[in-house]
Length: 105
Image 1 (tube, helix red, strand yellow):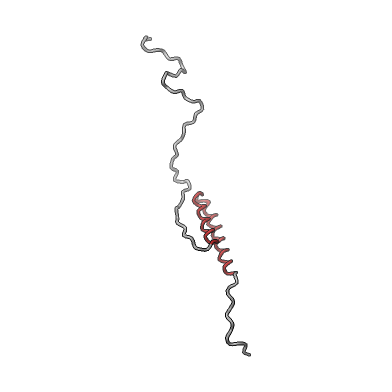
Image 2 (tube, rainbow, N blue to C red):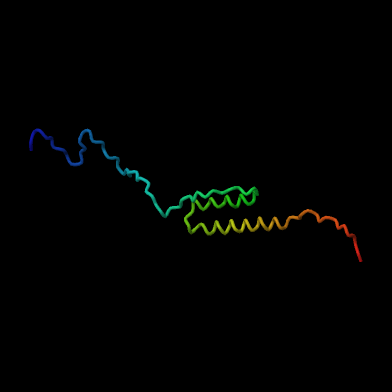
């Protein structure tokens, strides 16, 4: 061989070239997955009723679930809203005004 180019042994790393770290896994750049859960970013306007707002707030759980998990959340929220409405019907209302006609027989 020529005297101007030194021979490199097999497996040797030339000067100025960083040695590879054994078993190093290169960092993978995150890729866009269209099937991955994504927030819907739907505005939820407060209703003024704490029980209703709590149920509507539960809809935010769907932002982190795949679409096949949405049904369970929707059914749970629907059940909760139905319970809130039933509770409103069960509350005693204001007393009835007294009758001005008295008892007539």
